[in-house]
Length: 590
Image (cartoon, rainbow, N blue to C red; front, side, top):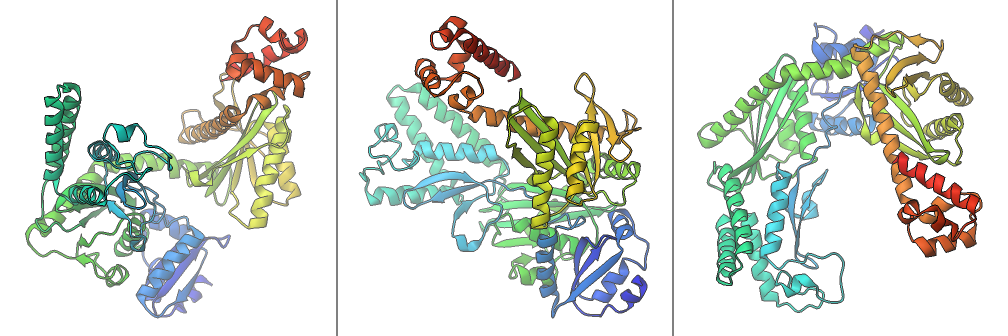
């Protein structure tokens, strides 16, 4: 059937979607010629990630478009919509900090990170700064040298910053517009590459402090000047035209591609970004995906230097022809430097990458085989936490293809406060999957609960009621609170997994992660609890006694440190004892 369908694919541009046996889209691609591209997956021997993907393909579909660019845009939208398993390139959420200058309503500087930057936002951004510490230190120095607005909100009166000359008094509008304009010109000039203006400013301040015998402040500024000189010395001037540009070099070997992006701002090399990822489709197509993904999250410079082997017509059209393929001179050397760095990175990191892959994808695949599952792309793990029945919470963490998917983590505050672990498990499982059914969100291939047979029964009871045939397992800990056994939810027998195997270490990582996440939420809930909510847990303390305790002690900490006699000055002896025992157990649990 698949062979007949492949023969019918037209020789036209479009986007194709690969599906597994459950009809789930596992890969989205685009092609100038759909027939050639789709058939290429099946008419030749594949290796690496491509071979693994092809082994899971049970069906495919495609959408014909009028051009390759249109197919590319459709492909990007479909990847965002379906989040396919093998389209990993558009999932990177790393962002670099920028220094942002805000002029209205008052001038101020801050370090900003944006997961998407659009030209129409008209933000004054300078960077990126691969070294976040350097960005923060520069902002702190500029705030010290110039009277920018530093306080939050709009106070009615001037603060200390005004009196020490580090603010123009924006709240009382006691400044002159010409002072504002001069300051803005100097700051923007420095951020645009004029280092001399800031060095002169620092030297002027050092001289002033020295003449007034304030040697401590003068020394502090001298250290700042030394640091700035070190930073600027590393930013070797490579091009003289001061154009903001990036340079993209890559190196492909053993099924992996290493990418090195160099950031040049105002003619200076300010840093770079490195990535290594497996090729799934075609080097050109995967590099197209990667470049679009990167610039969806970072500012697009005026010019991008790129190798002619990946400078496609689609990229030129998509980015409005900002790509330059250097043929000679400094730009050509710069591209060669980026390519050399990409090769060095892949050579140095390859063994580490393979080891990490065996600990994630490899361990996940081995677990799938042990549990006899057809697919194991997503695992949901649950853990409960409470303190003697109080502040009952549950946490859910998600692992996809062996890696934590932190944007999928969820916290649950249980509706009742009593020490009922099975009841808590029933509530959180119902809330999680009843909502998933209503909203038609992704369901897991495996659910792991923290506990043994009791927790498994509680989970399966709710899944059966919701008519969800999802595999359930339990993770038991030993008396040292370490991962010990995996319980199969179908047979209720222990699964034989060697303690030194990658699968066992994988299970331990997952159990530790869900426990950490849930405990942190539990502590957060408790720390937010007011004195009133703490006292609500003690029998014999009503509204009147609660008011008297708050008036006398004022905080939970003071009540924890109070003697029994001090508590009995407000409470009857037995109630005071109950409160003291409760507060002690609460303190020990922290």
